[in-house]
Image 1: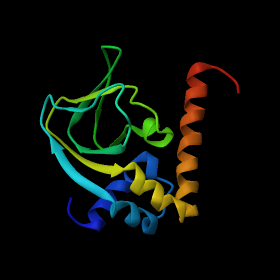
Image 2 (image 1 turned 120 degrees about the horizontal axis):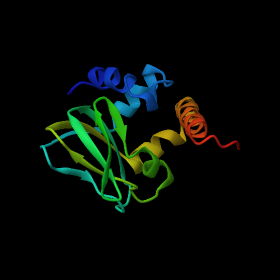
Image 3 (image 1 turned 30 degrees about the vertical axis):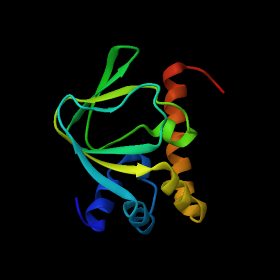
Image 4 (image 1 turned 45 degrees about the vertical axis):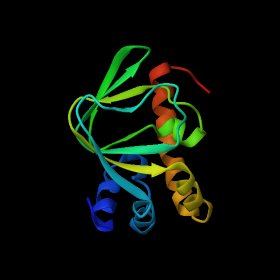
Length: 143
C-alpha cells in the first residue's frame, strides 16, 4: 500500500472515515505510516497511552479485555479509536493472531490536520454519533 490513491481507497472501507470526502481522505492518507506485525506480536496493551490510531489492512487480531478474549477482527478495521480521540489509556490489549498489515496515524499529526478542516470533523462526528446510538440500543438506556 504505497500510493496515496491506494490508501484513500482503503480508508474509504473503514467505517470511521465513511462520511469523509476523498479529497479529505487524501490528506489523512498523507499522514499514515505502513507497517507489519507477525503472528503473536502485540499491537498495544491495556493501560498504555494512546498516541496512535491503527488501521488493520490485512490479517486477524484478537482483542483481550481483563485477561479474557473478547473478539476477533480482520481487516479492514480501525483499532484504538476511543483512546486516540479522548487521549486516554488503552482499554484493551490487541494481539495479532496472524501476520498483519497496518496503517498508523499519529495523534498529533491527525489533530493538526483537523484544525483547519471542518468537513473532516463533521464526518468524524457522524461516526461517533452512530457508535453512541449503537451503544444505547445495546444497553437499553435512554440519555
